[in-house]
Length: 135
Image (cartoon, rainbow, N blue to C red):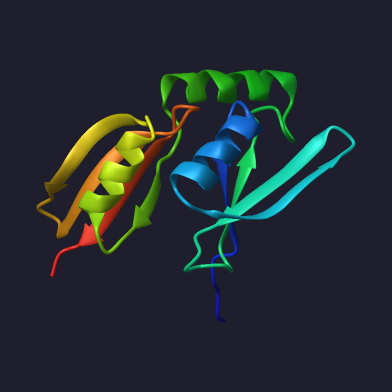
């Protein structure tokens, strides 16, 4: 069996704000932005990985009101999973993302597990980590 990653999902409270962040601040390419019957399918990819798409979803998309409210509350607390990107120059990435006004959680540091990384929050509160493998 040969598996490869196709899509992953990031919850955002406002697809337009999320789209602007992931496209304009992180530099991802928009693959799809389709609206139909109250549903919006927004996907973006790193330019170096066009076959991997990040889907921006709202908390209530595909969920009951109760479950969507729970997801929205966790999102507001910053309690959902992080997204980790890799780069060949974490310091340059940090400067660019910080200059765009993203909330800094951690400036670039060398980690004991072999990467230099930094961390931000996207506008919805998700943690975004950027790492550069040591070597």
